Image (cartoon, rainbow, N blue to C red; front, side):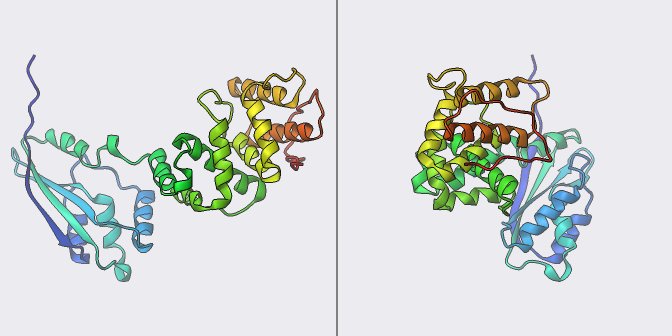
Length: 293
């Protein structure tokens, strides 16, 4: 079997001051047919990073096809277009790293395109969450996946139940720096496991709501739910809630998030009132969700 060989050679590499003229030149040069279509959302995101002062130096690339002598832009379509339309808001102090390659044939442009911003090395949500978490010494002993789920639950509760404004997107992970949430994140770390798939975001949101009311009782309650009632009878609120959550997770048409939260709230209130034989009735949007007692 013959090996596929491709010529893909770096000809030069240089770093330059980023100027409006350079951005315009790069934005208007012929783009390779392999480059991504211009996405307005991506352009907007890049613009927000530049105007917000969080943009780093840009990395742009071009390539000459030896067989045809043509030169194309390979990477930098979005950033150069965004920059060329900033007018008076053009940033100062930024640089751009320019790489120029040669490829043997036009078909080799696809292979070159794949190597730039290689998707296998992109920062995942889990990577970003872990980065924020590990900067907080108190949280370093909590498994990263559990800490992230805990914070997602806190954010969901604050937005959906309390109605508070919380950071969006990756900025939400800055909440790791708030000591008020550390106790809950540790509690969630002790309860969540690979076997608690029924603990979806609204369930963890309910966990946080109960923790905010009675931390010790909340841990006892949710530990029991996570362990199928932890030896309680079939009519105990923790046993019944666990059965309801598992059944809903496996359902073809599972209940919406607020219905899941409502079931958790009903079970918690029954637990606090020492009532058994809980009846989790169907969610009614007009009645909303119960207050946690």
